Amino acid sequence: MQIYKYKDYDAASNAAANLVIQEIIKKPNMILGLATGVSPIGLYQNLVKAYENDIISFKKIKTFNLDEYVGINNDHPQSYHYFMNHYLFDYVDILPENINIPATDKKNIEELAEEYNIKLFGNQRDLQILGIGKNGHIGFNEPGSQLGGQTYKVKLDEQTRKDNSRYFNSIDEVPKYAITMGIKNIMYSKKILLIALGESKAEAVYKMVHGIVSDDFPASILQLHPDITIIVDEAAASKLNMKSDHLVF
Ligand code: GLP
Image 1 (spheres, rainbow, N blue to C red):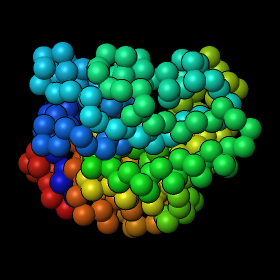
Image 2: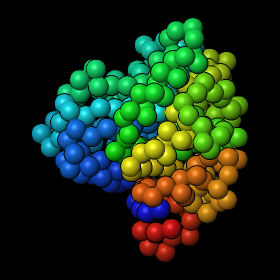
Image 3: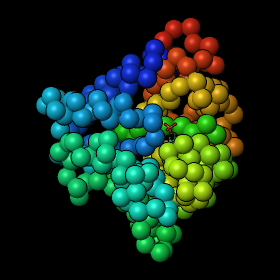
């Protein structure tokens, strides 16, 4: 694990964007795994700027998102379809047919998950962007998820619903289910970039790096990935005891 610490949200977002931009320049037709949440917003804003400045193009890029809620429409402001359009896709030259986000709009959710899973195995990600939940979830793989699991319909943890209720009018509106890439799908990426920002992630970052690898804390599996970069700000790094701004673990 390569861990890089930056002063604050903006510095960390710049660094994350620089890494993604370098990868896109190296491979303009890359397959990119995308995440939602507050953590990658700054990264996406920087990618939009890089596109506007003609540094990168998304024309040949294919994207696969980690997850989507079940029970809200794609045009709901809290859906991940809406999020991705709002923070990235509407402002760059990505082709609509190259965008992949789990569909949750039909009755048979299990079938939709299976279809997405098949697509994922045919499209190994060159780079997967990840955030982390306070309870160690990655995508929506909650504590207790199978470490070898593939794309599936997941019942959301109450902690996750509570954390995500800040974006809804009330907790009752937060969906109870989602489709998520499984941990096996996430690990099937050549490179991973995880962004963890803010004090509320400090404990989770510590456990991800130093904890026992276990399904109790799904992000701990990332210790086994051969090429993972973790970008943190000072607050999220506060429990790591980093003597310099770069730690290899
Ligand atoms: C959601 C997403 C995760 C994300 C996590 C953290 O639950 N499904 O993919 O990593 O939240 O989000 P934030 O960056 O807003 O803390």
